[in-house]
Length: 390
Image (cartoon, helix red, strand yellow):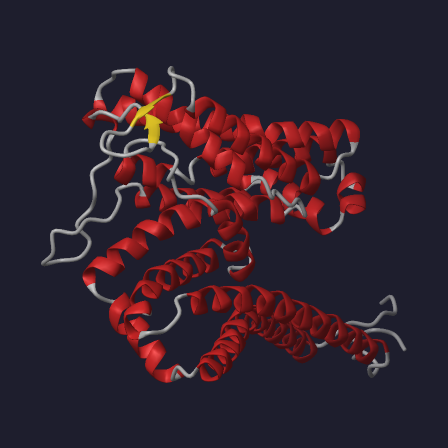
């Protein structure tokens, strides 16, 4: 028989055990980073509270007691829907190392135009809602495509172009709101907004909390569906594989036949399309009009939540719920003579801690991989297969 070496079944079993252990360790490290970040942010907040004379444990207890009551809980779930969609839009770009900082401008411009179109047309209920959502998606995708084309054709950084487009979208929205075709004065106030959406364009709420008349925005289902689609597309399709491969190593992706410019264009448009939906839970489930007091800042909140959730749809969901809980719970602090700005300090500490924690975990994984390779290169001899010639 021809000579050769092979690993024994015991050696193969040992290898699989080690591989399984590495996968489990990687999963634990991925989970440990955001948990440690939240704990560290809590410690920083506790120090700030002590300095200002407020008891940390009692303050947290007040926030929790208030946050789990039906009305604040309902409000938190409604906020979390928009936060989740915004974070998904950011995460799509992050998975390919694209920084779509323009989600804020994309969702606000999309909400404005979708509200104007929705108020100007009359359709049966399902079609009316679908038409508004379609307009929002197209506007968000179209606005994001400007940054995508600039990057692909002229090499302009998407960070710079999307930040500039945010400013342009804000100015454009203000100009449109002052046009008679888009906006009207809101009765009883100095506010102006689009024509109110009729009943056929309003999405009914869902009574998720038994025993109360409070309802959660019906478009929370849309957020859940988008999270599922995000997971399937990125993890179960060839496009998702190409996207993730390009994000990990562009030269390797090019070598495997991936058209990187095409991937950049499609990914940015997809990110903008999802961003266009971020304002829909508020528009179709609560305000029914786009006005000067339409909720701002969802795009930048989405960046923080995507970082906290590590671009994972489940992690992003937990991050959105945490952010919404902090926002709603801060309302009770002032009643107890505690500055509600402490919540903003906690948010900032969480974001900073997440970045530091992920970097530490990344460095640990690199060092552990280098040690593992060193051990394997200096390992013992393989076991000869039975019957092999000496």
